[in-house]
Image 1 (cartoon, one colour):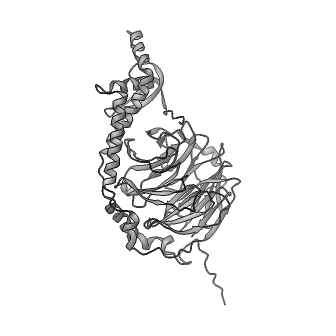
Image 2 (tube, each protein chain N blue to C red):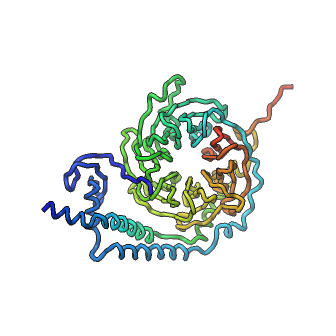
Image 3 (cartoon, each protein chain N blue to C red):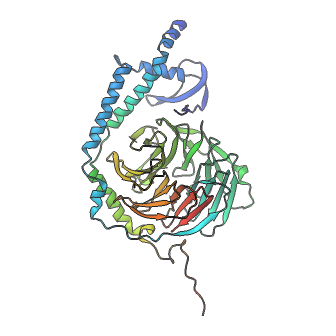
Length: 80
Length: 395
């Protein structure tokens, strides 16, 4: 029995890895086709809303003064 | 076609045929089992339904791809920059070089910020990994790696450890001690093992797990303490060059991009590829999530950066200009997501308005390719690493 089992398998060997790969591709595509999507207008509006809500807390966008930004050079105070 | 071998962490008798060989960890009906590759193929063939042949599967895959395209196109009712027409333009930015970190002997390939917003770690082609204090320019630690081209480095969330790797195909974790004289190299812990170079690594929300991407086409999740492989992610058909974890509020997913021009979104628990995007015309060098977690951007050798929205399941913006012909190696968003910083191979950093799609500003200063760009955790500055052996902090 083992010899016929192997014979059967080797006859299919060249085709099997292609079939396996193809089966995986089809399963993945079926999965991807089934997800829920929203309209771009809705998604874009949400992205924009996030930006607007957080704009004031974005130091690179609004620019912060030298005294609050640790990387900007501070004006040196001199004692008169 | 890359050398995409599976990671065999066990070697022993197969659960099905009992021959001793490298085993693949697979799940059959949610049960973890170990099968040798021979049995996996046999099982997959038996899984074919009656009448399924290569031809019928090909047809089904073509029709599914078409259906996907149609579904995605149906929802494409407007462009992002059209929605953003009514908002104000970004006011002039006054971002300049504030610090130049010199000390590496060769190209700086990667860098990462610490959560304390001042420390950063950088890795270089010369095999050195250096931990810097960004405020004082002090080099706090220097770790020599046994390999050159340390392409990935990451800071642990606690700030107590760093992870790095590259041509050694491994990701190693070094605990950082306060004792300056301590020999860090001696405390090295090898966590990840791939069959090709390590291109990216990041800690997950704790110091206990690391996510890695590799030239062998896979990504993997590892437990730091035991070095055990927790989950592997197969799906890319070429080297994976970058990965990024979703911001913590949005759940257990991450995105990866690679030389197969695809950006894939993965579920960390199941290992499933949940979404895939293929619109770039060349290798994707870097992927980064938008701060809200609903979108991500990718940087590619085709000289464009693209924004993909996860809920709309499509590309929503392309950041390109005819005058930009060099590839983008890295990108990052500012804190609000309004600005996108891209590091280009023409030695510059371009700053894009994410919503309107136009370029806002350019940062000059580096004398060679920019390899990595990262915004600090509190958003006050951007750090860029370059092949000119230096890092620059801009604010």
